[in-house]
Amino acid sequence: MKEETMDPGLNRRGFIAAASAAGASFCVRTGSASEDKPALLGGQPIRREPFPSWPVVGGGAEKALLDVLHSGKWYRGDGKRVMEFEAAFAEMIGVRYCVAVANGTSALHTSLAALGVGPGDEVIVPPYTFIATVNAVLLQYALPIFVDTDPDTFQIDARKVEAAMTERTAAIIPVHIGGAPADLDTILAAAGKRNVPVIEDACQAHLAEWRNRRVGSWGATGCFSFQVSKHINSGEGGAVTTNDADLAARCRGFHNHFRGLSEIGEIAKLSGRSCNLRMTEFQGALLKAQMAKAEEQASIREQNARYLTGLLKEMPGIRPMAMHEGVTRSAYHFFMFRYQKEAFEGLSRPRFIQALSAEGIPAFGGYGGPLNKQPFLRAALASRAFRKIFPKEVLDGWEERNQCPVNDRLCDEAVWLMQRLLLGTRRDMDQIAEAIRKIRTHAAALAKA
Ligand SMILES: *Cc1c(COP(=O)(O)O)cnc(C)c1O
Image 1 (spheres, rainbow, N blue to C red):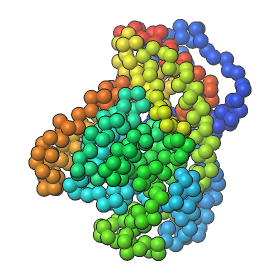
Image 2: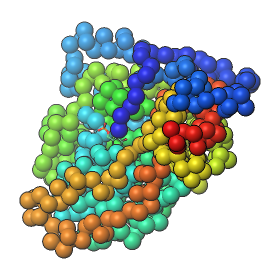
Image 3: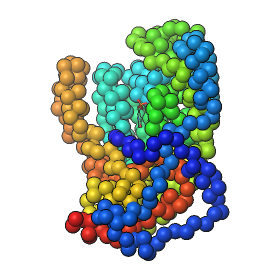
Image 4: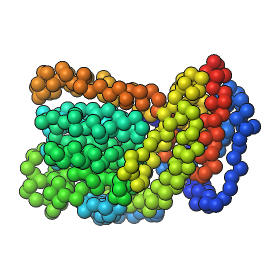
């Protein structure tokens, strides 16, 4: 996935403007703007100013980083920054334990390892996710089993999870895609029937809530990423959250060669294999600073996203993602909608995205080819290790068993706006809607050109 970078430098204009937006009235451009030629065909773009840029510096980050630098305590074993961050993040998510790790992928890997998921096991995953969700499963020589996407919410179709489980199922990894919670009630119920642990991939969902409780606190573990695109970030970074003391110790042990930290009991050594996935003190310091703005930014995104959903949902051919009934807060990592070209004179999605970007609204097609059909999966399953581990009929039947037709269609129709577009003002949202309206007005001309 590529993130465009049209806004150089830092920009806090958006926050200031959004903070003062309540009650202000905006002059919305209508009619005349729509009648202009599309920017892609040489007309004036709806918008010339950049959207807020990302990442945002604040919360005393500069001093915190310099303090670490000059202290010489760069390693978590020498300092307190990572430990302080772990305590603060556990409190933010509402769990007892947090283990900071190198990145979100290693949070998933650590969770699987700590839960003893390994060769011969199956792990249920959604196809509409970042590749890391699946790679973590393959790293443990377990077999990913894809459950199709729910067409309205873009989340894993929780109603299909139970039917996908077998005696080999060792974990379920729902992903809160786009920052919106998956249907945790249904997933946890299906998992509970067979006593299978749920690992929440909350890498896009910091501060999102299911029934007023933060995601990352519902499963056996929650996995977070602090990679630069994520809502709390330190360039790279990750965390495992859990309420289970034993599991927390296993995660801590796995991520640090079972070394150094006194709370690791003998039990943590039972799995035998371990790694170094430690976070540095620089990351700990930066993350603590990043947390200071997270709540305010989450509220701005949520308000803008709800407003934009209201503007777009009545538009023919535009279907913003819906939320499950249990969602009390979405983190809106992306603003996602389906684009139906039939309502736009057959204008193709790539051309629509091009036209929208030309109007000054950077947009993307999201996860391109369906994940369950990517060649790397076929290669992994054909590898010597997988052929040794899994019965031939399981590998031979995998492709047929992992068809996800609803997801295939979503991959063709989805359009994404990055989270930073939601950090500005209501007027920014009005312009997004206006640009889409304008493209629709000129869809025939755009489709022909
Ligand atoms: C970002 C992300 C990850 C992986 O995080 P990294 O920190 O980049 O390793 C995993 N799952 C999802 C859904 C993500 O968006």
